[in-house]
Image 1 (cartoon, rainbow, N blue to C red):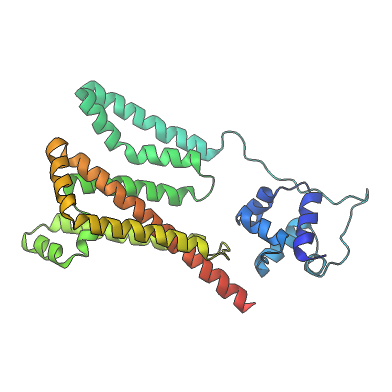
Image 2: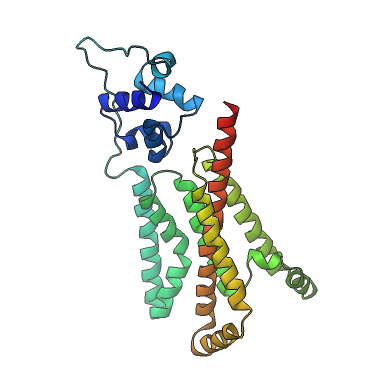
Length: 291
């Protein structure tokens, strides 16, 4: 019996789904599936944890020795604590979503529709964090940090025109210094430091999750490259200038900047995802080579 078959046998005998086992091991469900199919082998630390979960020795798990049984001849079942229907993260999400409702109502009472829109903008970090609490079960703090940064960054792009990329442009940087725009300069550096910190934390958080398929990061790198090149080529074309002038003459400038910034954030998301997936792939490859 192979290790994958043994894991499958132990899991099914203890009434565990692949999702249950992946939660206990803090890996993806796909990783468990690959182990059972023989397409991948769990790392040593996961083998140790598997032996603890199943209540057997590592030799019994790896070498295929006889499995222990309890008095009635059946293996012991593992009791998994199921998440209740309204866990603390959802309570936090409810509170975070309730506060914006009050803010928007007050802004509407003061300024009408425009006031309500301002209230939505003002409370957008709370709204996004509240949604994160309902959508994600793990790494809620990390995703909330990304959500808050996204909201603040979008506001600064629309309101001030400053973003982290202009700091990397020497001509723009020199223009801001000569013009004495030190507050805008500081905001740009703060945005750059924040996104670099979030990227590093995200990579470190997910790097140890096994990934043996190199196609996945290549797909994300490809999408990012296509979007980035398409934007660069289109921005340099005469057609872009015509469309830009027409849009700016027929719609609010802030709205144009918003949609432009949203596009930038989409391909930035693909960049971060590709970076994390690449780090996971090389970490997995290096760890397997070391075994």
